[in-house]
Image 1 (cartoon, rainbow, N blue to C red):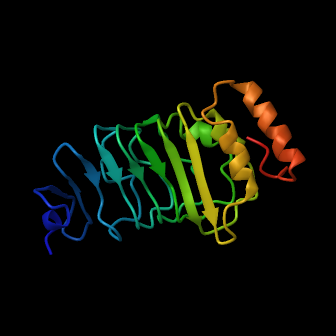
Image 2: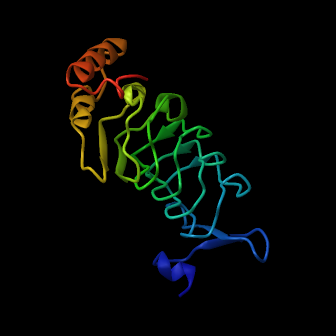
Length: 192
């Protein structure tokens, strides 16, 4: 099957070397990297700004370093071997950020790596149980909802976090949420 058939339309191909993975754009709709084709975004020349979607699902990249900073639509990197967001420099996502099916044990300082998401962050089917800091979620500008699950299901701290989204109270929401998480027995996640 041709890559263009996978997209149901014409594609513009970019091939770096004969053995390199094929990356392609689909018109003005966005930028997609085929599954199982890359192990890093660093040398791909991914645009800093994408006016549509960025999809890089099912690639063992391990880091978002070299990924786009501004994505006007969806930013999907589920099942990419991620265990941290360090290296990511995501300034703005217009619809949702999908970091599902990865290996996060915490989302420490998520707000330093993901500045704004005008919608939802999906971290469902996480391969590890998050037991470390997640409170930085409340500092991601524009975030309306956080969806999370792992092999044990959806822990109660997710509902508490979502009570404070979208965050219109700033640091006051962090303090209230932290106290509520502590009181509910989720003190290990009640940190930035």
